[in-house]
Structures are given as C-alpha cells and as structure tokens.
Image 1 (tube, one colour):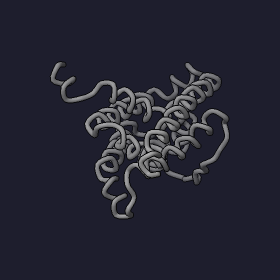
Image 2 (image 1 turned 90 degrees about the horizontal axis):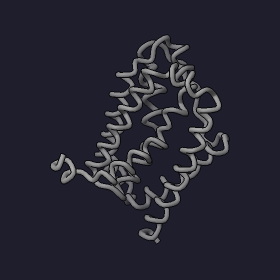
Image 3 (image 1 turned 45 degrees about the horizontal axis):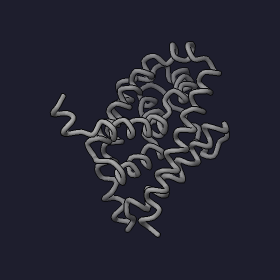
Image 4 (image 1 turned 90 degrees about the vertical axis):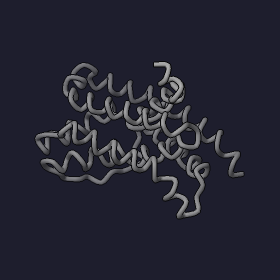
Length: 199
C-alpha cells in the first residue's frame, strides 16, 4: 500500500476517475445499451470493455504526438476540450441534443465495437478528456482512472437491466443531471487552468 501511494497520487486518480465517469456517462447510456442489445441479441460486456480500454490507452499515450503533427499544443487542446465538455454538460443538465449521432445498424459481435465501444464509451468526449487530463495530471494516475472506469463500465453492462429497473426513468434522469453539473464545473476549471497558457 505504501509503495502504491509513492507511485500514484490518490487525489489525482480520484479526480481523473470522476471526470471520465461523468464524460463516459455509462449510467445515462443504459437506454442506448438496451436498444443495441434488442437489435443485436447480445452486447458482449467483456469485449466492449477491452476494446474501449485499448482505444483509450492508445489515444492517451499517442494523442499528444498526433496533436504535434498538426502543431497544436496540449494546453490549446485542453481549452478546446473544455468547450466540448461544457456543451456535453448542457446536454446532460437541460436534456437537449447538441451532438447528433448517426444511427448505426449492427448485429452480432459488431455491436460490441460500434456503437458501444466506439463512439459511446471511447468517443470524442472521452478522447478530448484524456488529452485535457494530460495537461493537469500524471500519466500513471490517468491510466489507473481509465482502468477503474472500464471496470465500472463492465459491471454496468453486465447489470444493465437490473440497474434500469432499480433506478427507473426518473432515477436515470437525475443521475444524468447531477453528473452534468459536476462536468460543467470541471469544464470551467479546465478552461481557466489552461487558457492563460495560450493568451
């Protein structure tokens, strides 16, 4: 335990975990998950979780190099990311649709990857958040936060129907609004912390 504390910052892990949890919003995605399951017959929770984890870790490690090819620094991307998180928070709080997803028909194993693993779990919001978090936190702490979130994603995918029955439509709506407010506060802080570096 002492070695873990020396290698990792529990405070950073907690904060990064909360950011990703709010952005991934796996609880709020339960209606979408059920819809996909009805179409495909099965959603393969383990496969979805592993593919999402690989996509997110790959982007976390190589995302900064990709930005470098376009001459964009991480602070600028963090500011852009904060604006996207801001818009996503308004979607969650006000129940409006700013980002429109194309409807995708998938059956069988494909549904484990599209649209669940990508873009619902490891989508634009998650990618933006990962790069933005790199401007604030250390890489090992973010990786732990990603793993924690994907474990939670796996659990939710396994228990989707039970969770839906437990929370009900009203409960899911409340959860989305609560995490929307948290995400809004995070977006404002992220913007404030990085905008000074590019002005």
